[in-house]
Image (cartoon, rainbow, N blue to C red):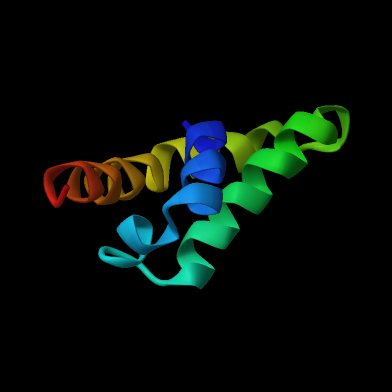
Length: 69
């Protein structure tokens, strides 16, 4: 999902900005990059916390982007 956001951000940033600011999307992209490049150093509880507490909001915003276009 984050890889798709990264690509969308490069090509069609205005779609993402309709539902959240640049900082919001940047945090998601940077988190994905960190996880994919430094997965050995990541605390499993941190990943679990992100999955438990953040994914629903991200999904809502992605659906907003999809429905606005």
